[in-house]
Image 1 (cartoon, rainbow, N blue to C red):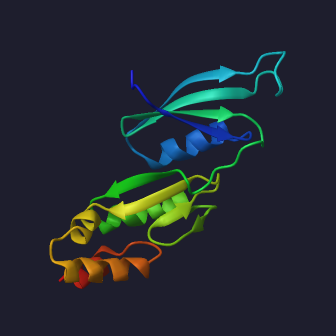
Image 2 (cartoon, rainbow, N blue to C red):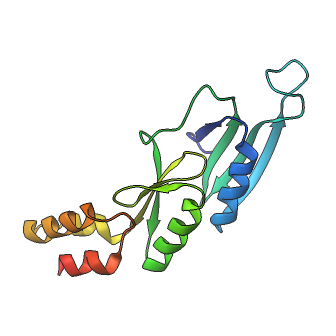
Amino acid sequence: MQKISACLWFDTQAEEAVNFYTSIFGNSKKGRVLHYGEEAPMKAGTVLTIEFEIEGQKFTALNGGPLFQFSEAVSFMVDCKSQEEIDYYWDRLLEGGHAQQCGWLKDKFGVSWQIAPSVLIDMINDPDAEKAQRVMQTMMQMVKFDIAKLEAAYA
């Protein structure tokens, strides 16, 4: 068992969110589902928790009510090897959500995601400070990342 995993608190959309995420990521699966009983704050039979896994990472989605909301203070990073991957994850996770700066988006449930190219960190950490600065300046102008433009700035 994974020592640490994330629990995502939803109002009432835990199962909908799990279905959404597992439809996007090919290497994913749903796990155990626990339902509220008779003496619970939500209607008996409503999903309490649902376990799921994406790319080997285990999560639990919880229907806990409207008390807590997601914020950008926690986000999930998707490491993309190509522009096609960036486009795929960006477009799918953005459905019903909204785009933010520098590869960030909020999905329709309010969960924050960073859809980033694998090469970005290497370019920004290049020992040639001028190259790294050009990439950083280019990156700061982007909403969805464009690898070709980042590579052009790097060159």
